[in-house]
Length: 507
Image (cartoon, one colour):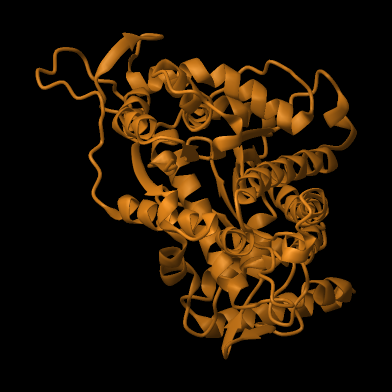
């Protein structure tokens, strides 16, 4: 009997989740996508009279589904109906589908590779978005999305997508906070401005929120390695357990970072943590956190992710008896992160887009600085101080590259290398510049003059250094590398770390 491999990929996830600037809808959208790619798939099979077998489910997470069908009829039912049902529940997203026949391939791994290829082709095609369009437009529009209104809620018209997000929001918040704290607790979802008031000290004006996005390195290469090296039906269990192990390692790393950063307070039942997870799954995380905790949290998470993936995948290879396959998983995985710092009224979807752009830039640099053949963990941080931002490459061109000197000092790595500094060093510099005797205001003024008058900037820098010497603060000069105006050089270009240090010292 011919068997078929079915694959589905949900697209437009980020745009759907961050469609509005309401934290409740962002959290609910995340949970809705997770539900559609896991529980709902099983429910759809049951409703259409198709038996579900756990052993035939290869992958069901983060908007991706792979399932083995034992007959063509059942597979055809899913292809015809599943994508439509998903898009009706979440207007604005699209679903790409592909099928391969197992009989056409020598190995299971080659069949999975072909399925990936066909899904990639489908994702690149123009897709019709099945939304809540009404040709007669009888009804009000949702003000924040433009979709067809289906309900009044708190004196506001909302569309079907918003309604479904609201239904999933409480479930999501409870689940994500349990992952974070290890405890079941109902936490009211606050709006962005309410979070900033709760977490920030408005008397100082430093009510910044950090949006952290982190993504694992080389995951696709590891999956392709499994496809090539694992033979027979056993590959289904390997892929399934690989996905579960990665998800567990990511969530464990987030929890350990939370416990380390927030210390004994995090153990209290009444403690309201200044962090809200938005996406926690696979090798991806997106969290909103109080600004001054974002850099330490990112630093700890990246270190824990390396350690936890190493220990858990060593156990994974041993448990499945695949140590001899040389998959390289036992060496652990690495990740890159991007952190944007925004004010609470800044549109979240812009902030998330920037954090993803920062992550991509960090990945590009990490891939060019391999350590023992491995992509190292790194992160880039950027504080948004204008009303509109583009992607990071545009920011570099317009704001950070001044011909004779560059302000884009990152990324910052976990492990020291010859060309780049570490996050630990960045945190040490920030601590130093916050000392009462440090010339933070003078350095900020110096940074503002550099793009316009390098000669005047040089005079100002020398005066700052002379004042430090006269006040016997040589330790600040050495700790902040102020011996020379531009102490760092890479690829025949001069860089300063002080743009990051000064800006990130006031969060």
